[in-house]
Structure formats: structure tokens, C-alpha cells
Image (cartoon, rainbow, N blue to C red; front, side):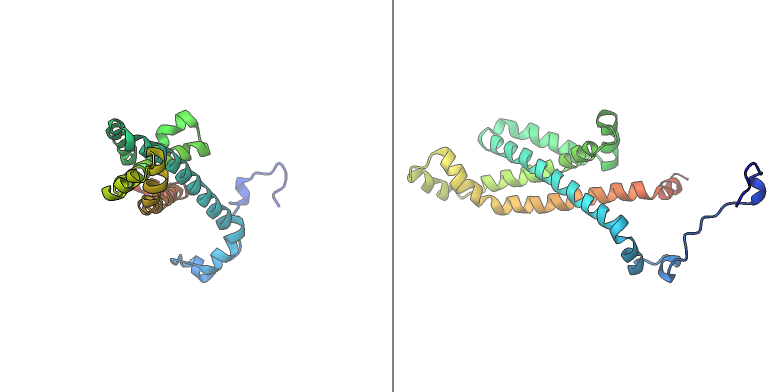
Amino acid sequence: MIPLGGPVAAQGPVIPDFGEGSDCVVENRLFCPDWVRDNWSGTLQPALLEHVKLTIIAVAIGFVISFGAALLTHRLRLFEKPLVVFAAIVYTIPSLALFQLLVPITGLTTATVEVALVGYTLLILYRNILEGLRNVPPDVLEAARGMGLTRRQTLWRIELPLAVPATMAGLAVGLALVADALLVVAERALTPWNRSRRAA
């Protein structure tokens, strides 16, 4: 124990004792099952649940926005080009740059992450939903009109059910995209030594 009032430097450096790691950890192997087991409940499981929650929220919000935009442009083609251009611009911005642009506005909050991730889902979901609606065979639409279905009934009973495969494909791609973006941000935040190494 260092005596009170005594010179700290004279006692030598204080090195914390974290115990001994396994051979896998010491040798820095690619995957260490024992480390995963020891850190699952305190570190990995909470981070995984947070990752899943952020991904689901972003894709759900993006789907609602894209669904509404697709329904609008399915009837009014005038809005298609502006919406596609906006979604494409957001999609091309690198994730880290977009997060940095949002921080002065929304701060270091969950909203910053969600706004960026929702923006990345828009182009994929919007285009897939719209293409699904427009790929309904003309003879099917003609048959619906012949049966006396109104425009709204045709949309809900014919067009939307037939657009489900394209919509589900967009959701799958959107989930993968958002999950990858979160992994990139997590890797960047958790490995600052890599940033300093690249800068050097």
C-alpha cells in the first residue's frame, strides 16, 4: 500500500491485475469460445440485444415511410423521381459521415443512429414495394375491374397481396444493410487504435 503523503512516482507504476487469460486470448486467435462464454451475459448479450432492437426499429420505420411513398407514387408518378433522387442521395452518403452530420442536430443519442439507418432503408424498400405494385399482370387488373372492384379494393385485394414477394425481398435486404451499418459503426467505436494507425 502506498503511504499517504508519500511520493507516488517512487513506488513504481501501478499495474492492475486482471488475472491470466487463456492461451486463445493470449495468442490473440481468431475466435475464443472461453472468452465468449465468460463475457456473454455481461457484455455480448446486452450488445446483441441492443443491435437487434436498433435494426428492427430502423427497418420498421423505414418500411412505413417507404410503403406510404410507394402508394403515393403508384398513383401519382409525378412524385417518383424526387423521392428516388432523395433516397439515392441519402443512400450514397457513408455511414460514419452521415452520423457526424447528424450529431450537431440530434446529439449523441439513439435518434442519431435511427435517423441514419432509416435513411439507408428508404431506397431499397421504396423501390421494391413500388416495383411489386407495378408488376401486377395487366390481365389480373382487368379481371378485377370486370368484377366491379373499386380502385381501393383492387389495391388492397389484388395489388398489395401480389406485391408481397418483392416487399419481403426488400425487407430482407434492408435488414442486412442496417445490421452491416451498425457493425461498421461498432467496430469504428470499439477499435480507436485502428483509427490512429490509419492516420499515422
